Image (cartoon, rainbow, N blue to C red):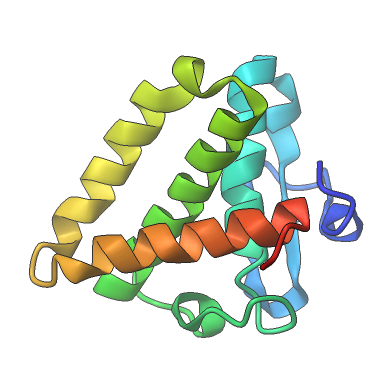
Length: 137
């Protein structure tokens, strides 16, 4: 877990989630998941967490968006791409890539009206990885 985000981590909820209002993310029961999948899920939740206005100030996370909307879909793509990048960097990408690809494809399908958004999501995910790894350029 990133030291930069460890203070926002809580194990009290019933599922992994990101709470924008309190700047916390909740990995919850993911501790029971297999280690590889748990790391991917943590990367996904960290991807959401670093978008907070006190961190990267990402537009797609500033306000609550309706489930399935373009903004919500974009944010899910960013978070999962962040997880995929982090898994690749740590050498476990080959074991998580199928799940990540399917998840991204499902959300990207909702962005078909503006295909440029997937490129935007990839750039935002790279920024999130840089922030998590403290390698900002």
